[in-house]
Image (cartoon, rainbow, N blue to C red; front, side):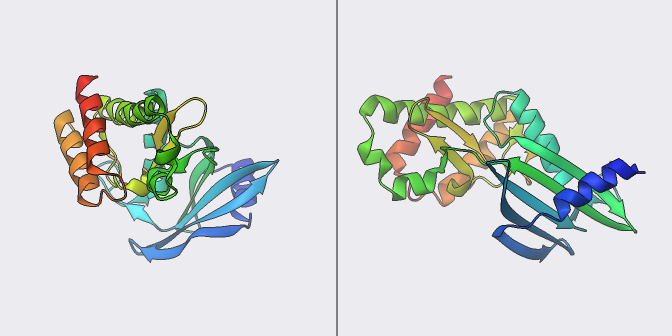
Length: 216
């Protein structure tokens, strides 16, 4: 049972208000949505869920999917994968209703790889920077798969890159990530899913990512 202090902290975050970046949607017989807020000079993203549950052998009666997402983010961060930094995360059962919060910092200076290509930033890149960016995407995938994790929702909008200064790549939206006992199954799933909707990444650039990946 949550302490009074835990309940008060949870409520403070729950009561924050901002612009919706993911409008509340009803699925899994519950609700989930994300708002962007400003706090102490930082941009934060607040995901709220009400009875938005997953079920497993461990949790046959269900737990908010945020519980699983927090676990995945922490696990991938420990493996060296660039993922959003968690500011606050908690799931509480209040009056018989599951509520959950996940507050993360904005991935400052990162941009979705789809937007990066759409904005034609690739055309402004020096060849060595472009090669390093594609390599860093491969490194991010390799680190994730090295702990037998598949992204599970592997689309261009969930791959984020930074091509100025220290070139880096990482992932967002890990709610559907799952562990695979056979690592190669995670690789096949993520790559097949991404390749199905690869645009606007040019096929030749994706091929270079895979060449880097298999050389690591």
